Image (cartoon, rainbow, N blue to C red; front, top):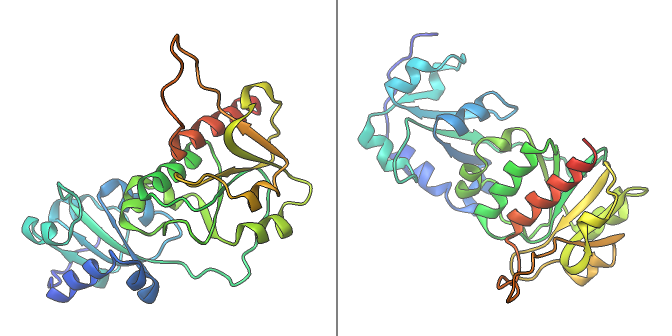
Length: 261
């Protein structure tokens, strides 16, 4: 490993990281924050470009990847605590560049693809991205009203899966009109055909709706099949009204993969 130069930690660094907690500043500066060896390590070994790395001497001693010393800032525990959003700061905080997306994104449906409509909870979004990674799903389409994937809570809850899943924000109706000709599409809704009674294709589009409103009528009109995850009836009936969006996504992805493995 190259020798690390001691770079000063300034108040401007604190201001930068704190500002990136807000969406408007992430969009302006095209930067986002990630924390902890697991998440930062995955991003360092991906297509994401490092802007600055704030790390303890212990982390830098274990860092194998060659990084320009101008991007490395050694910090002490109290300094790390000032810039971390974690309850227990963990060795490293990375600031990465947000990739510039083409004005007309290229979407090719070659496998199971998730479409998320208006997912607003950062934890749900991060868990869905992590779930997609687990099941080898390479592409997620997000409606324009979905939570920002570079929200710090989303980034942390992906546990590094952000590095491996391509995520595109797009008008969902436009996506259906222009990108899925010949591909079977499914929507996760309540009280429809049980997913366990169907033969599911390997190449498909699966729509998951928002936590509070589900899938909009306009999008439902575009899908080929509405599917449900049946509740297991107990003597007095199920008490839960619905499943969490990320849980529903995980169960459905598992069934698609089980049938096509």
